[in-house]
Length: 431
Image (cartoon, rainbow, N blue to C red; front, side, top):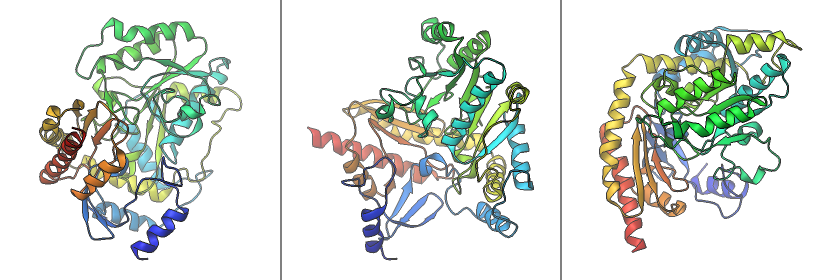
């Protein structure tokens, strides 16, 4: 299909994420992707600064992952997980139990990040129903968070600054604490944690769980907060006997410099969600892990089983690729590589600090963020970045980078330089 035909069909019929079907942002047709590069149909090549919304950690067309997919296709692409099991899923389940904190012993494989959050919330609710405490049906979370686009996931996203305020009247009404003001690397003062403590004390009889993104709040604002804050939240959950759900869909598998962001605080959640990088961006797959207490608690009450079962649960093709992706990550010194990315992002984005209109530049692990004082002109900045040979997808006041881990130093320098140059042009146009 030629690119003109492709774009004509796209304009007439395709509905893209977070867009209207009319008067939408331009789209750029891709015909191939290799390493950290996207090849457009017009021949231009872009360095990908987004890892396809943070999941393609090994880049594109990786020979190890390609081979894992081919080998599994020769066996079976899919069988139902109800009443059946298979090696790819069991290898993945065993690996996830071994890599995550010890209390997490039970793995529920599901379809996507949002579904993993739905499953986590449902587990927490059913745990308390089984315990004879159905009144514990609400969740506490922190503002500036994002947990997905399905209904329960939307209900724990920020209800004011988030993307889902349109649906606030029909969503479950949750309890929101202020976003942490203590930054990563700082101690958490009593004033920082007091709002969470007060809300837990006030609502403890109706709270099933606290849910948060550990250390890094992603699409809700790309904020990095104190590990000490997370430690104290865990202690408060224990004090008030409230479950803790850690949403590591964006942060899992090394992005923050630790394999899982909870490790920065040395804590274990009761329920953990994983996704995105789980399969290296090849196919959709997610997992929700639960502690013995949660799993056994659900089993102890009627109907004695967890009432959820996605059609593609435990998909063999996805599990085989996930196994290969995790093995590929762990086969190398991934922590040193993330330090390399952190250094490159710090160095490359530093000049943005001097630009008018830039509120802050912050970097943690393989995440670099330029926060502006005003929302970015999305369409124009996107076009200028593409002209400079990079793919970056800003939103709100944020221009951020989460590149594949395999990006070279030269590619990373080019990526950062393009962002700084385009933001500089925006400043000049505004003057």
